[in-house]
Length: 101
Image 1 (spheres, helix red, strand yellow):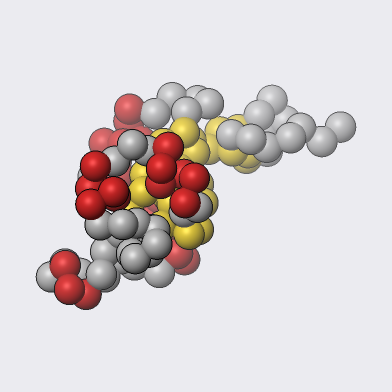
Image 2 (cartoon, one colour):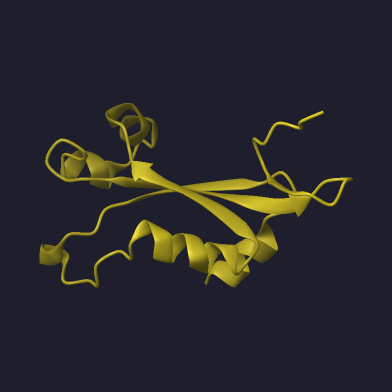
């Protein structure tokens, strides 16, 4: 699935997802941040993972988030992927990186 996402993302692109998986959902647990980061890196993506703020969840306008009272009663993780690229010097960077002169 990540390969397909990476193919859709061009230089400068970011993709953000809000994810919430609990044992009672009957789904496999979300992998640890390091494991997720490695999987994204294999597709040329960098990954930021952190708990989502209440404002970020509200901004999503998700009816499911409202119904599940996330993030108050249910933890939500923000995943933000960015396409990696090489700059003119050959250094690897990501979106949001500042050029050092």
